[in-house]
Length: 317
Image (cartoon, rainbow, N blue to C red; front, top):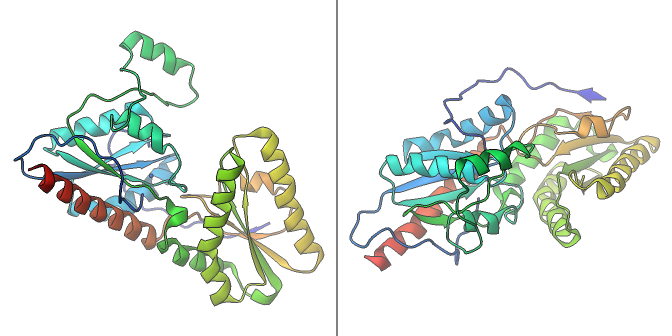
């Protein structure tokens, strides 16, 4: 494998004391207004998966421009009620009464209903367990995934799309592929994403990500760009996905073509180096971050949610 290593990272990480998502907002259910007549005090909660220090630092860098315009707090993890509640308390302490929840996930479907329930916008989440019971539950979790309704008077406005829906990401994909390409007519690109367990949802991932790569194919003249999902958390489906991905790389090499591998992940190369062990391909290990278009997308979602919050606030006042 030929790889180009990521350069030194500027670690901007005064990123809150949390562990670890975006999009169109029309028609999204909204929590009850905290009181008519109040001035709109808008803040932003960024939800994302989170990971290593490098992962978190890249996300923090993308979110940094928002800090100049809004109170911003992070809730990292897979819609963990604990990190969400901590972010809510920090926003409350900063005088916020309306919150735009920008969900920075690949798919807008990821943990959407669960988040609505935790925020109390939708029924379904239980009350917060007592501290001893909570400690017992979390002891059996590989990572925190608390699920309870957070007690708060804040009004929430949630994004509904994911990065796979975002036109801004077309430029990211074009940039990643261009930087790895030298002979486009004799190159194929395998774009690999995490993927969900449900087959119908997985097809939606494939269709949307393929849309994000279309401009790159047209602009760069790459012989073929094909999107795969690894189905990483579903062992039987993952085995089949690994076989398909490896087969594609092997076939391209046997035809004298150069395979390029680009991850459709928020940050990093994930498990793909292990999956593609001993195969010959070109990659640089970069996910969607760092790239200014991700920051642009996040900023646009926050602004759009503020407009929604203002409209809702005016109707209630």
